[in-house]
Amino acid sequence: MTKRQVGAIVLTASLIAGLSACAPAAEPADEVGGELLIWDTGILGRTLENGDPDLENSFLDQMAVAFEEANPGVEITTAQQGGDITSNSAAFQAASIAGTGPDIRVQYAGGPTISFADFFIDLEPLLSQETLDSLAGFNVNREGFAPDGRILGMPYGAGNLFTVFQNHAILEEAGLDPADRPESWEELMENGQQVVDNTDAVGFSVANLEGYVGAWVISAMVGGELGETVFTEMFAGEIPVDDPAMVKAYEAFAAWGASGLTNPDAGSLGGGGAPLFLEGGAAYYVVGSWENNLMLEGFGEGNVSSFFIPTLEGADFPLMGAGGPEIAISVTEASENKELAVEFLEFLADPANQDIFVEIYQTQGSNHPEGDPSKIQNPLLREQFEQLAASTDGVVFAFDSVMPQATIDLFYRVNAAVFLGTLSPEDAVAQLKASYEQEIANL
Image 1 (tube, rainbow, N blue to C red):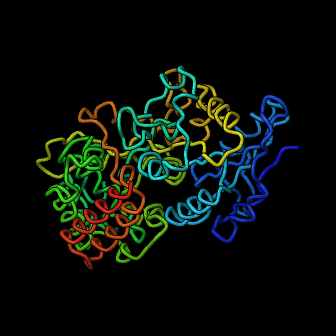
Image 2: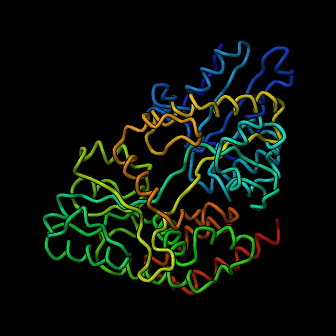
């Protein structure tokens, strides 16, 4: 009988003991099938308003059903970790220490995967050579970002990109041409001022309570200053966390927070800034390609477009994108059915199944050279891939995709404080450096 998790569950320490009853069967998969428990951090799965799995729109649940049908006797339970990144990371760590965690975990690639190196198995000797050769992005999930480090997660999808969406009608009302995209952060600020001076809209719709907007902007700016490998080099100690480029980026970010070009509650508003932008109250919305579908539904084709977050004026790498591999799928040390778990990863890696992922979500392309480009139906995603081809300086893998989890958590907090003006750029960078040094020492 197919098992589906009834409702999205918040996996907290108080529930971990009860989850042991859901632990996968120890019997070998090649004899009697087997059970798998998957924890997803809201990345590959979708739920309905009542918390039930949205089978029509949830890629993870569709794949679970298809794998069960292809492998009689296999039962897969999918569970959505509730809460934010910090809380569900803590819940996974507690469950892993207790030995009651899932067989498979889906989380963000890079630092959020590498931070849990003790709890994930090395996939390199277990995945097929075809899968290892065909999927780009394994390097960001190698332990310590070392070329020969253990592979702690299988990358999935071509990755997300940090973008600025623009409302054509408001820009035209302000006397700006949407096709004439700003080439620098300073030019973008000038456009925002022109919008404020000539329309009833604000320049930017922002919700930075959680510090996520800061994460996208700081990563893009520093990448423009120091290149696409800046944060992996920073992790390795080759570039200091308190490099002047970090302070320079935070100074620009603080100036934006104090500029008056955003909605007045930008620093205290959480949950994304889409509502104001969709209501026609702002010319620009800084976010990422994961909002492609919402933007297209809200404005219709031809009324909204996007461009990569621009770098600071005079940057050494002005044609820089930011984002990169986003999704990692890992098999845990706690799993009693590791071989079956790896089989499920191989199933997901099949190019036909990756095409289903692209077709359902329309936020990123396939991570397989045999991916079908016709599956990219959202014109915004097509536009972003065209811009990606023109980003000859590369794509910087973001700070919060690289650093240890505790430093990432601090990164979000200082981003929020700097935007509000309650923390100076210098203090923010000093705190990040101290956190990095402490976490690296503990690795």
